[in-house]
Length: 533
Figure 1 (cartoon, helix red, strand yellow):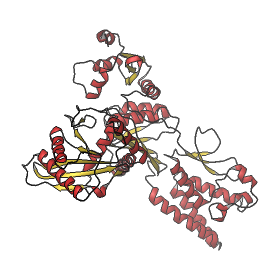
Figure 2: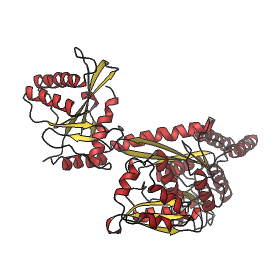
Figure 3: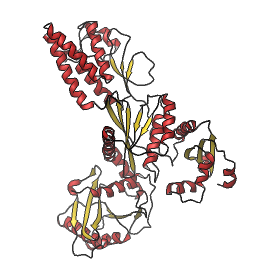
Figure 4: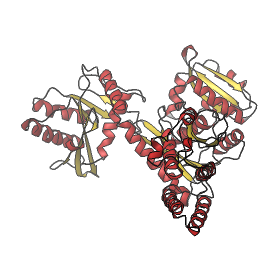
């Protein structure tokens, strides 16, 4: 930018949003500020800046600002502009706000229960939002088993002359052919609504009274049915019960691996865990966990008409938590609390969310589609004629130069091949000599592979720099193996993912973009060395 000093001198101290533009007016980054002058001045101060900010400023050609009436308005505008422009230097979440609800209709004599999406304009009682349709269908399935409420459409209902299969298998009471009195059916609906509202204790108390009354008048069939329903409800409550005192809570867990992040949203309503859902954002290099969580909160909650919980539990305190909480409260029209460093039961919920995030990111990394995308990217990056089918990676580890161990990790197009993992105890070398350790491990591995006619990899990753790469090359040359592409993966000075340098034998080193799927695959294979066979 030209004449930065004049630009900054004319800025206002009001809240607002700024957009950093690159060539041809492309939006690179959108940010919010309580004080535009202070915030933007910080970018051009002499203070040391993080690598992400340094990289951003190199590409900025212009900055536009929008002054807002309030800080909360700035937060909302920032969210909308990020959704609109999808800037490269912002953390981006996929825009999917169509969360499902359970609908219990109220206009019929025999109400039905159904999955519902969209604005809650039609008449009926809505329960949710649920994280996904699977959680909704599981809940509806439970209600069918216990209370036998109909799920069929109204047109199907009025056309029936005989009860359908659901009646035959005990999932419906057959109201379409008057197999149950309207009063009894309404009682079942009332019970189902109490169940969905999380009023488990009240529901079971009522059903216990009904069971005792039925037994007193010798109606043992009804008493047995109520007994079975109560038993099922107790089993469900043991699995789903969280806390009746603080029942409306969202819990946000986060995990990071191989250049990716997963945010896990655990949804608790009416004292019950409704389910959880994973989100995989696009994150620029050097984005902190706090940035990812802040982006999720703003993009997930601020531009939605969905109901917000009264409390959101986080792993760490956010610098802007009070600002975020005020904006969320204004949007929800009720107080929303952002809680961190929780204890007791809340800490257990957070552990569930964080562990689920770890599982989600592991599953996502090894999905066939995702792996295929990464292998294709690696093929393109390395200019290979075919997609590599087998990649091996060697890493050297030791404790203060002693107890040196080499590990070999193997990947194919379906992910890790753990049965082919190998571990080598390195002996007879100078302590701390990683190059000698690499030479010994490569020799032992591929000399045996030759003797046993084993399957050789197309690519061999060496977790190290030029020295270890050269050691591997000398061994392969000695064994007359010339079909393997050697690739050294050297970490940057800060050893943070995304700063790796790729070394080749006869080519200059390469730095891939931090969001490159090829780099993510290399990181994924390299980081898998920690999983021992």
